[in-house]
Image (cartoon, rainbow, N blue to C red):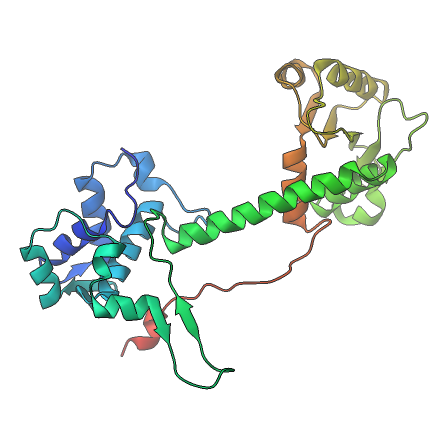
Length: 307
């Protein structure tokens, strides 16, 4: 089965709390077994890699139940059901979700919280309580991914409208920013120009003497104009003329399945980098883009409140 969304976990979490004071980690393990999640589902991580998806959703279910005052936090990582929570279970609900919790004043205050004051100090928070199955963490990360996807497309559009020389310099600079070229990165990379380059557009020296080199082919193509196997074989021939053992073929479009298969069977190591991969690396290395804003996600410091 797929990993349940956090709203589907609210009722199971409340039932687990009815047993008395429980530890959140134990509830995560208990519900994972109860729901018969397989090992992959139990181990699946959030994009941050710091927490499993299932654990994150159980935590959010517990948090929302707490805001509705159906459970209360007793000590670090522990919670229990409240009298209000027991009264809810006595009615034997088939499910608990955000709309169900909206009947409780504590939950309504949580999602629509404001403070009185002058217009410059008023803080108004409207929590989107909808039928979405995603936790706030997942919504935030999905939005971030959407923003980066749009940025990646904008980067590719700009590159396609640039000159071939600019594109070649971009690839060399990107590789140097990724650490290729060693300690002398300022002198390790260069473009070879459009004439007399024997099918090679740039080169990165991996050592001070240039004994180990990575040769680059860069094709600035429009979307849909995919690279075929012939171009890969031509690049292979260029590497052979330069007595090179490895190369990087970059395009702003993509590679056909036949081209990828060809690169796998050739005797020289040729890495293929398509447009989407190129854009992702540029964003990662802050090449052609910059940080516009930084959002900090904070949580309770449990040690601060321990006596």
